[in-house]
Length: 259
Image (cartoon, rainbow, N blue to C red; front, side, top):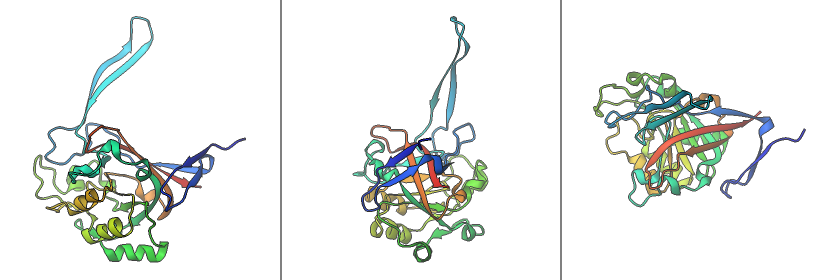
């Protein structure tokens, strides 16, 4: 039987990679959108699904149709560079090579477990590279905090569940110096995290967003199941809704892992 082959075109610095789907395990890194989907506390609205039709029509067959609405930045979603950079790329302008690429997973879950404000440090990155090799340009870097296991409990996930209040949020994420190392020095293609933001919860200036946006590096937020991924060896497909001129949007992220 002929294997189903998927040839992924990814940044030349990493090298083209062929993935045999018959020998690949697929992991969904995406939270489903529903009434419990978490948004930033000051979001003007949340996810809504309106039933337009559901049942048999005059012709006798079944038909269903819905209308949905949602702010860009909630649930598992993309942060386009323009989100924090006036000259950054919009959602529809991000090259596919930054959305489909080999990934590494840096695990800080043990450090974040007892410190909700923990931020990835340069030392953490260096320790990861000591074990796994230098992170190649174009790589998608995923930060595992295990915060996704708290989803959809807004209080434990965000640190505060009061509507409109953004001054008491607590969850781990990237540190500024580590972000500079990954984005400016390693030239990674994208960064993602299984928490609410690529900046930690207590951030007041969103410097990681600013650094990423200035370098046209997109962010993937509210990912899940990063504990099922190896430190290296996975390929990520992170395809957002292609909103022309958008600053972000819903994201379906999937990891392909060789068996």
